[in-house]
Image (tube, rainbow, N blue to C red; front, side, top):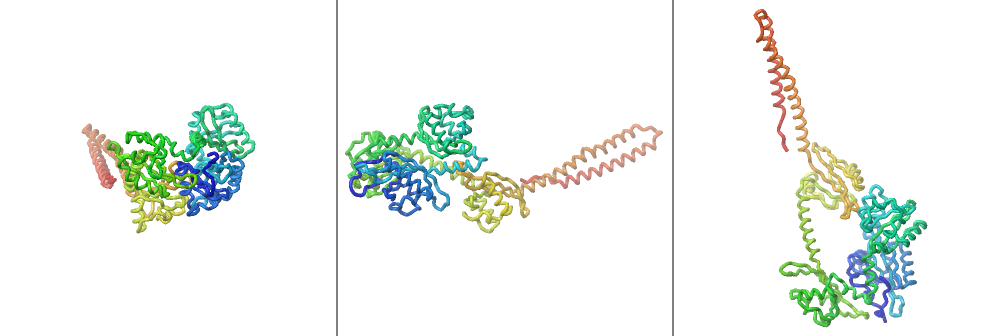
Amino acid sequence: MGVISSSLVKMGNPNFEIFVPDFIKNSSVYFAIVTDLEGVYQYVNRRFQARFGFLGTDLLGQSFMVGIHPDDHLICLETVQSCLAHPGKVIPVLLRKPVKDQKEHAWSQWEFSTLLDENQVPFGMFCVGHDITDAEKATRNAQELAKRVETILEEISDGFLHLGVSLEIRRINSKFEDLFELDRNDILGKSAQELGDKVFNKNLLRKLSTILLENQMAVIEEFLGFSKKWVLITVYPSNAGLTCFIRDITEEKRRKAHMELSENKLKAVFDSTVDSNLLIGLGGEILNFNRVANEVSLKTKGKELTLGSSIEDFLPEDSLEGFHENFPKALAGNQVQVEVLRYLKGNPYWFEVSYFPVRDASGSLMGVAMNIKDINARKLTELELKESQGMLNAIYNSTSEAWFFIDKELRIKSSNKAAKLLTQSLMGRSMTIGESFLDFPHPISKREVSAYFRQAILGSKFNFQKIQDERWWDILMEPVFDNERSEIIGVSFILKDITLIKENEDRILRQNELLKEITWYQSHGLRRYVANILALCDLVSNYTPDSEQEREEYIRMILAESKNLDSLIHKIVALSSNADLRFEQ
């Protein structure tokens, strides 16, 4: 963020909050804190308070060390000392932060800079950071789970590059290809030097060689002239070479440069090119405005904004009531944020209107910053998502399969209607959210459930059938991933009663066996007797008077074969009556 110095700090206790740009105060991504030289919190933004508020109901007045992992205290102090020794520099640092009710910690990337008074004397520290826990977890997962490394690397948001000990390119991910507009088939196996300025300039190659030689993890910020991009490269050396995670920070650098060129950090709210931003005086007069606010005024009121004029002259009639309600709240020191529905040309349109109190260098209230953001696309998406969620819930609860979602602790996190009915019939009550899934009367033993669960948590999928108490069950267990598919968050357990299906299968098998037997008798037994009878009839029809005795013998044989044929027909009829040819679905 650069050095923050100003004539705003004169006498007495400074108001630390005025040195924090409003877009940082209201950021949903960046943490921002200000401490005095004793390391005591003097200001934290809403993002920081929301994430780390569990450290205390009021962080202000506490030592900033309470929000840092004990093992990182020393590096944090060294970073502060470096800032004080070089007040003109911004010092980056990687810090671990505590996480509520968890043994693990969160990783965060910070930039420390020095606050100077009008005499260029340090009086505090300004720190801006963001959470990089997901990237760190992805890194560690890639190192620990070799079998899943390709999937993980393709899913992370950073570009991935693995260089060998001779700086040859061994592996990249899709993000790297997109970042540098290269195809992995064209560069894998080549040395970094061969790619030249397309990826590696001479300065970057020299740094990578030094990291490999010193075997020390490093974070590099570099400008790549060919692609005209700023990148932040986290480099992990090993015996196999260098593992690099590359993030495009061009937009962040652009914003930082813009902020560093600004003479007054409070003007950042008016430099937005997306939202309408106005600074309104205590009496409702316009003190400042940005280009978008002026364009909106031209479209809605047909006139340009003018400094010193009353803001009420430029607001739509249907928004005056909301302004009269919320403007006094901001004058009282409160931050107000409301969603407003307006009708433009008869069509509904959503805006987010925010009011922030603004104070001068002495801490006195000088007015209110008013921010108007177009959130119509977001609201329409939210409504569509809500409708889609309702449809998904209806499908989820209408299936006949019992469906459970189990977390990593084997607790039930959700279940559908069929699952509730099944537990009610088996246990006499429905299982509640948070209960151990091992308490459910499974068709398989608890030991089997635990064994399958452990494998499913590691990424395996199981589908098998089991019989218990004369009932057949089809069981499906598979891992459930988070929205980014970077981490398994639990297991899906689907149970379906297939007893009737199995009974129908058995019936069909029995029918098939009887039909095979009937077919054999028809194709072999009947043909044999019929053939014999036909042959004997032919002999009888062609006999001579001299062979009367033979004719009688033939007739006797015909009668015998006819009885055999009749017996076989009775047997076929009996088999057919035993075969149940019906199929019940």
